[in-house]
Amino acid sequence: MKDCIFCKIVRNEIPSYTVYEDDVVKAFLDISQGTPGHTLVIPKKHIANIFEYDPQLAAEVFSRIPKIARAVKASNPDIKGMNILNNNGQVAYQSVFHSHFHLVPRYTTHDDFSMTFKDNSNKYTAEDLKQIQNSIVDHMGD
Ligand code: AMP
Ligand code: ZN
Image 1 (spheres, protein in one colour):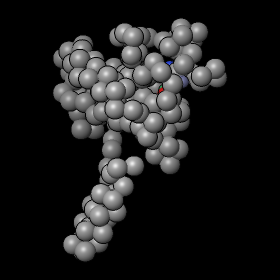
Image 2 (image 1 turned 120 degrees about the vertical axis):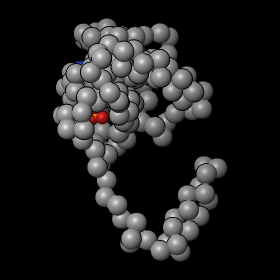
Image 3 (image 1 turned 180 degrees about the horizontal axis):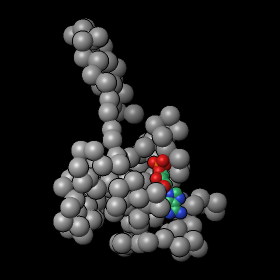
């Protein structure tokens, strides 16, 4: 896509600190470096978000992530773990609308990355959960 910043990175029209690429994906340092080694993995094909993957592209992209994650982890002995994140839609904090996966190395539980979600389990009855379950299952063929 012409004006997409990540497509421009794929085409090497703007520079990136690329750590891996092949015919399907490109992996490069996230300019924000949330923690040192913060890396993005993107499909070379422009798709906006997770909802646009077909099974083949999903398999091809996901199958490359562990190898890249292992290399990032091995790059620094202080990396103890890693969060892998994929934001979809502005409401979910997506700011670049070319699908990408964040590999965020973790050094300590109080490094520069945090992620929390509320535990709302006490607000849901079994009936509520059953309804949500059924609604999702009903759409699984879509
Ligand atoms: P998200 O908010 O999930 O859409 O993530 C987009 C990420 O792209 C942000 O973490 C940015 O720091 C990163 N980013 C934006 N422009 C560039 C660029 N030119 N090179 C590397 N990373 C970038
Ligand atoms: Zn793009």
